[in-house]
Image (cartoon, rainbow, N blue to C red; front, side):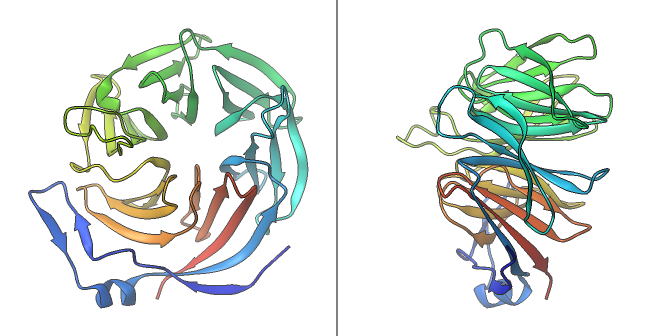
Amino acid sequence: MSIKKILPVLVLGTALFSCKEGSKIKDTAKLEAAAPKLELIAEVQGLAHCESVVFDADRNVLYVSVQGEKEPNDGSIAKVSLEGQILEANFVQGLNDPKGIALYKDKLYVSDITELVEADLNTGKILQKYPGKDAEFLNDVAVDNEGNVYVSDMATSSIYKLDANGKFESCITSDDLEDPNGLLIDGNTLYIAAWGKRSADNANSNPKGRLLKLDIPSKKITPITVEPVGNLDGLQTYNDSTFLVSDWSTGSLYKISKDGTVTPFFSAERSVGDILYLPSKQLLGLPMNTQNKMLLYRVKDN
């Protein structure tokens, strides 16, 4: 179903947080004038507790993780067209609580509670399941150019790695990862959208997370945003200098530059999950977990 509607981007405030000392304040009217507009092109219903969406450039389709209703094996991966038509509701079947998805060659990788599941992109058949030792809540998935698969574990504040030899284990555990959620790889750098972990400087009842970067060879963790931003979830490249990041708890989307500047981008509803943004197509996908639907927007610059 296609729904045509022009929505102005809602600017949520005037403060821009920076990794430099202090915060930047910019004129709200200027921000609104410069903000892109979003055209709603599809509202895809019937995706029970959908969590993540990825794009398959070779097949020109989207894959969406569908968690189902918490019954054993009722989770799946749905195949959806770029126009919002469900092509195959149960392309990958028999999952429990699937979350983050990543693709590499002809394989799809999806986290499933304490396992990483590998499926065939041609058939949807599950090829292998990799249990994570001591894993508790595996979440987002990212793959580097060599086929190494990285998976966040929010419950243990860890990053797991599946290497070329099929070894799947934690490669780093640290409170400084702030219960990692969304992942994005660029060369030897793993960018992390953190949910937030209680600590000396973030000890409220609902702590917020920062955007972080992990140097994979040295395992050095560096905050990109000094101040916590939210319960961060989805993480995508917006352009060469900026990321697009979602906050699950508020439904807010932010543009965050590599120097740590945070700019409000759009306001959705609470439970927006692991988002997709395709700069070349100006396509934005928002899996809405508790609303059981995915929203597809065309991003139009002013």
